[in-house]
Length: 208
Image (cartoon, rainbow, N blue to C red; front, side, top):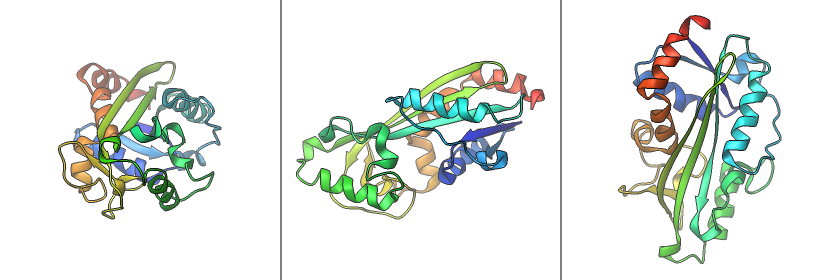
């Protein structure tokens, strides 16, 4: 079966593709590009869940009637910034900002933060929409800390600044397989593929 991913972020599509494959599910993750591109969504909900639902509904509106849609909204929440950049993670340095610009702004914002204030978490919200109903909402979190300088070139976004708990290396240093096992997206994905929801997906695989 096919699931259309409500994002224009190619890195996220790659991650989900790997996770579905590793889970042994007969699912092909298709990009919003296959539907002509992800519709513009003004992310004004103020919460990860709210923005995730906006994305899901936007792609659901142009997807084939019997298709399934998976939407993701995620970001980095830092203790020293009272949970920021949070829902604004992708545009922290401004609309159209690059990952490098966002990281630079974060480093500047946290340059005076002492070690005990450098705690942070990545948070991911997923919404899976079936042809006629919302199937589920899933939340994953990955706790860790923010370094004072970038380390590593793997991953994307803020990965080179974030060291997950119980690890000594940043997401920017970990292999894709390792990150897929412990990340916030991995945690949300594991909830989604729980026995109950996996069975529901498989039972509807003839619809797409």
